[in-house]
Length: 560
Image (cartoon, rainbow, N blue to C red; front, side, top):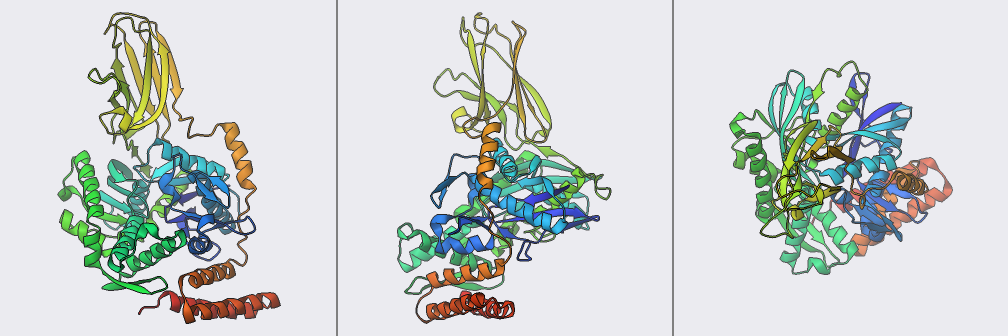
């Protein structure tokens, strides 16, 4: 039974395996390695995953969801076809599809996965990712930080080999910036920083807002399907600017147009660049490195392809970044490599990958100037090497205090309320004078992100120990089994005929977006495909699909 590596992305996801000493990306039913992280429920109640679902964002917005990774580990829910889903449940459908693709590729059952996560994911987000894997029917013992995976792949691809890397990972929804050392087969994460709500999607939204300003319409007043259509057009403009000097965005029945250049995009996205520069400053400061001590700036993530990103980094850091391999695939290749290490593959098992704690972990202490706002007392500082076990020493705040409440918090803010609460331990203590109690609080954080908290009252020689979980966000074993059974009732749309399904959904999307003669042309194409399907003539269907794809390509690429 195989272990696979999965890069679970905001925009696209990939699966990777280590086979015959080679790291291989798993193709999906369309023969592509990138599967859009989009879910839609069709008229039959089946789950569409990937390219077909992405087409339905415009035509069936109320039954379709995307970018849900941004809300992993939160209480946000999505309503699709009248049913509520959490972000991890939607992610489980993506993982289930990748699992099925891998089983088809390998010819054997897949029972375990190693999944990548942004280095800046907090404990709730990491737990939610692991839970998504279990809901997809896989064991997930190990999560790998995306920059760690990128460094692992880069170390095998790069001719320069050993050195210090600044991994700049800009995906569809998240930004990770990390300093990574690679020496003597050891890959060590030195420091991480980032922004869990900054990625290519934000550039798409900025383009969409700039378009609306230019043509005099209100973005907020657009209908749901209109907004989805505009964002899709904005994404296309962004991609065109990677190889063209300008791109024209055309939208709406009145065919309003807007010409975008990289210079205009850079001006429009200044606030995003300010956030990026802050993340870079933070990681260099925490690593105690200057940019001159960095050997390579490695671009990771599809959004790092943007020329404005390259020019910004070159200007801000005074050093040109580079791409080692494909930025879309390098994280998946690294996670696949780690899956091979976990399987003890002879060719790669000598590599050692260390990781760090991305956020500070601490507890609450009394704020004597404002009792309503306890202060954060760090115990395990951010960027501590994992596994880590450290102890904080505390005492009672009042005479005769008979009870203590030890909160467990994750974050960098001075006040506990501004950090993420992970849990709480309540303990009775001897009611002694203020300052005489001896309370030890030990945090033990392992390589898999499991936090154990141990509180000891030295006066009573009494210890309370707990593995911290957030009950409001995490399912119990019974709840997990029940939800797994419920989700399994949703069938993934069959992979057979997926090309036909994709062409039909694409045609419906273009029909909704365009008007006039183009709409008539699309309707005729769709009718011809449906007629060939009724005749059940495979050769005729194939011819009609090729004809449709050529027409749809022309309409999708149309410029005034």
